[in-house]
Length: 205
Image 1 (tube, helix red, strand yellow):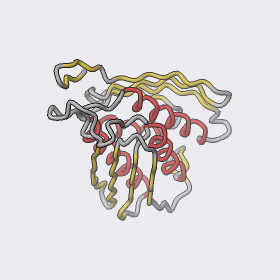
Image 2: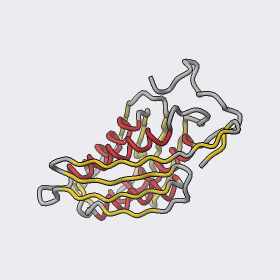
Image 3: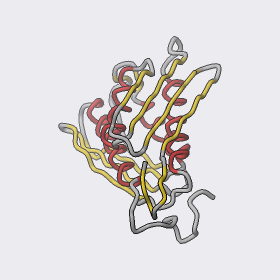
């Protein structure tokens, strides 16, 4: 819950998403404390989402059941879509937000940078190379797909880059930590901005 211009705003989003491939219940509080309750059935993905929430100071609940007997693709994709949608919902008309944020995060030998603009225009540029096909139960190719899906459905501009690193776990972890910290900056409310931070007067069209 935040106060901008004397108006109390509750910045939470909740979604239930059911398809023939996945069943998801997901919620986020942008003004939380980094508390999580995560169960996607994919341990490494839960680990990455935990980093986003803790470093973004978002309260995040994710309960997902997917067709993991096939592979992790549908579950990671649909959860990422839902995360983007609840971020978009929680932001409302985006009035008073800082809008842009960036973070560069090390994880041992790896270094990653994420820059976001909550512009209302979905676009992503992701430069990350992985050497192993899997980390835990999650294909490394889904790291990029996850970030792209979040960006598209949160309607944000996302630039993410692994600057260097050897260990794929560390590279992915640095990316998700940087995403959380960049989103923390961008979603914060600035008391000087009672208006929508755009010369167009809208971030939703």
